[in-house]
Image (cartoon, rainbow, N blue to C red; front, top):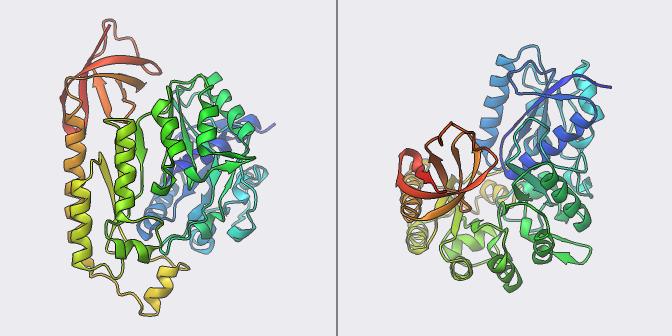
Length: 438
């Protein structure tokens, strides 16, 4: 029986968080003791992201920082960056192992690393990862890590092959966990005390297994006794009439949706090989708002895509300005090796945008996103909201707005409770201030 201590630090998407939780749960079930990264772990697992060059840089910085702070700790690096560039990560002094997106679920490897001996390994090719991988039957974090929100992996990989994206290279083609396993995991999470489940995947809406598609799975999950089911991200073309009917009538699915936009210019969308037009995206947002008035809809947007002209940017800015979006995640385009865009840039088919111009466009969109987020938060002042408290006296509305309240009489902790509040104002960082309702 292993009695070693393990900690995990996760970077990147919600799917990474779901997988980290699954790996930790499997290790705990095998006798490991979960702890924080600063609590004397024998093994530190760093789950990396490779969605952009900036994300990779942040991963390298974080790994080096963790190694400096924990010089005696064994370090295993996993995730998409580990899959795509194992030699880069394996070359960082203090990294003891690098596992790709298949090997990271082989829990015996972690014990071998913790016992010593450098074992940096080349990642397997993503195409050979033919089955959806999980480390244990459940994806809940180990006991003691909090019991409010849990991430549940239901799908992995992607068939969309967007021109700029490395995800198919890192994670392979789209595949889904069987619906019976999803339901078993969800009930397990509910039985462990979690109040919210976040459904996670690379292309979550592409779920299909055993004749069950995503809307059908959502209907099945209505039986799970949790307060909230949140969908991590959804491609705009996945908003079918069946999906809209399910979310519009659901008692558990929260009115918070993240729809990646990337660009509001049709020529750029075509170059990106996205599966919708600007008008199609607009229809998707308004369809959500029709079935769930006032719902939160956020978007990823990319600036500086090679070949993006000023008129393309202006079209995107004006398009976003007119949409009822609640927030923006703004990214500068990162040309990734191995992608269609990478080959086009290398061959001179598409020219990079001047970095100063990209920065200017990014700043304008960031300001627009902040304005929209503030407007959305202000629209809740004076309203009654249900808040799921995650720690102390702070928590989130179904739309994922942060709310804080004054401690109740006696200072009773509110973590894990879902309570009604009256929103009274807006503070710094778009944090809503509210009072508890009896």
